[in-house]
Length: 115
Image 1 (tube, rainbow, N blue to C red):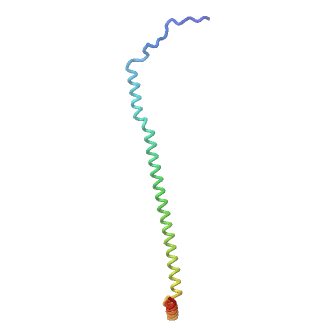
Image 2: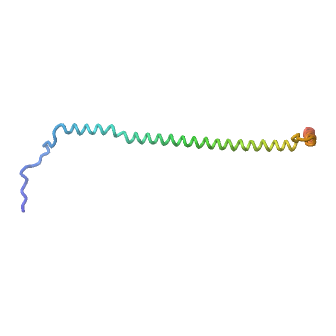
């Protein structure tokens, strides 16, 4: 079977669409341009929220840590105060009885005389 050459040649100057169609195509692209900022905007908002939540979490952790440290230091100070009071009571007596008071006066005079 032999092929016949085409009787009508295709040309590039022929209009395939009506003249208003390119304008409609551009109009749909301009509407899409306003939406093209939506994903970066969502990413920036999400990153901002993540940073804010992270900073709040760190601040809460530091507050709880400093409170725990402050409680620990106050407990140490209280234990030191009790230890000093116990040493003073041993050295000078707690004045609960006359013998303890006499012993405290003797310790006090010995310390004062040593200076």
